[in-house]
Image (tube, one colour):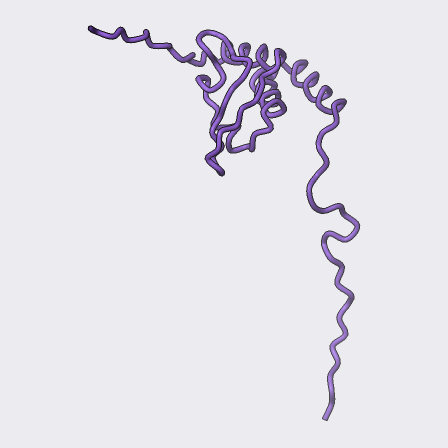
Length: 126
């Protein structure tokens, strides 16, 4: 009886020598480099979304579900906003910086997005 021995080459894992796990956050220098490039390329929407993502620290699914009414009060972008997270159903409050407000207002104006109409306060009848 012949015993066959199978010699296989040493298998190399796909992630050998690569960093795995959570990525480090962006550095301030990298954030500003991205902002400047978006401004120079006149990518108003991308700049507004990037600034909102940095300010709010929302998940991507929550960020893409943002509506104009979520960040606007009347005719201007609010300095604070509260959004309900999709995954946890918990409200998240965040501050919107002046730079982000400017870029969001520019995007709303350029895209001709509708701003929320504030209904008149109903009077109580006596």
